[in-house]
Image (cartoon, rainbow, N blue to C red):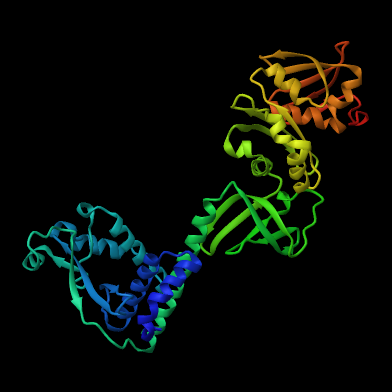
Length: 414
C-alpha cells in the first residue's frame, strides 16, 4: 500500500469522480492514517503526531506538536490526587473512552479555561516555548520536525491501510448522506431490489432505500426489477451509515407528481394549496393561480385530461378531484364538495362549521361512498361540514379530522 504512494494522485482523482468524495477529504484521512502508523511504531505515549502527504511526489513529512502551557493551565497536585481517588476502576475500553472524551473536551474548551495534567510529550512550559518562538502565548502549538521513515514495516503499513479504508468509507457515507439529505421531500426513482416481509427495498444506485408497508398504497404489488417512483420523506444518519425511507401514500407525493406533469406548477404560476388524500382510493387537491389568464384547474387536468391521467396511472387508478381554491370560505367549501352541486353554504365561525345545502338528487354525490366525499372535503377545507337537504334535514356530518356521521351512509353511493 505504502510502496504505491506515488500512484495515489490517479487514485484520488478516480475516487473523487466515481464516489463523489472530495480529494481534500481523502488526503486528510490518508495523513491521519500515516500519522497514526508512525506514532504506533516510532512515537511515544501522549505524543501528538501529524503528517503532511504530497500526492504528486509521494513524500510525507512528520512533525510533533506540543502545546505551550503556563502554571494556571495545569492541574494542581491536590486536583490530581482528588481525581485519582474518585476514579472508579476501569477496564481498557473504559479507560480509552475516558481519555478520548478528555482530549475532545480539551480541544473544545477555551485556552484560558483549560486545566491539564502536564505531559512532556504533548506540553511545553511557556518559558521554554519562548526560547524557541518569541511572542508565543499559552495554548499555542509549537511544531518539531520528526525523522521521516522510508520503511514503516508490515504492521504499520497494514494499520495505515485499514485506517485509510475506514476513513474513506466514512467520507463516502457522509457524501451519500449529504446528497440525499438535499433531496429529502422530492421524488426518487428506484429499482425494486428485494421484498422482505411487507417491506420493499429499492436500489437507488449508491444506496438502498426502504419503502415500509405503512407507506405503500393498499393493493399494490411490487416485482423484482421493476422501477417505481416514491417520495423520499426521511433521511437518517446512524453509526452504520444512512437510512432512506420512502413513501407512496404521503400527500406530498401527490403534489410532487403534479409538479412533474404540470409545467405551470414547476414555474410557480399554479400552486397546490392543500391536499386531502386516502391513498389508493381518492384524493382532492385545491389549486390556485398567481398569474392572470391561467386556469389552475385546466392546467392541472391538461388537454383531454392527459396530465391528471398520468398521475392517476402512477397511483394505480386513485381517483383525483381537482378543485379551485378560493379565499371565500363559502365558495371553497362548495367547490370542495365537487362533483356535487351545492345550492347554499352557511358558515358558523364560532363552531367552525359549514352547513351545505344540496338538492335531493345530489345528496349521494355530496356524501360519497361511505362518506368519503364529505370526509375529504372537510379535511381539505379544515372545516366541519354538515350536509343538509333542501328541507333543512341534516343528512351527514364530517369533521376536519375526517370523522363522518349520519344516517344511512352506506346507502349513499357515488
